[in-house]
Image (cartoon, rainbow, N blue to C red):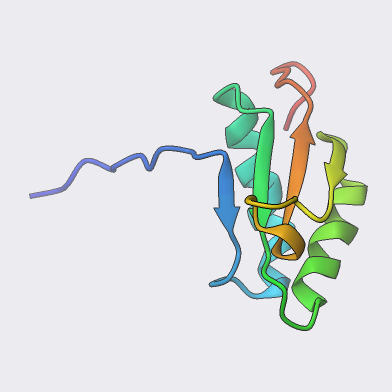
Length: 98
């Protein structure tokens, strides 16, 4: 008996601790696309403090993505501080979005 696929709800935050930096190029644009479709335009990206390699990869990607209107690092007290970044996303436009 085949199971019906279960759609995981999109939340306004993504924790990248379990992902490798090489996975960000596919992961974040797809996550942002789904957020925008759901009307979520402000998300918190949790990259951790660590060595800063993951954070630097995230920020480099954010600078290149046209759907990212701005981002703020550090996220602030109570929002993850140096271990997270707030990201503002443009509204979803089906005609211009991939």
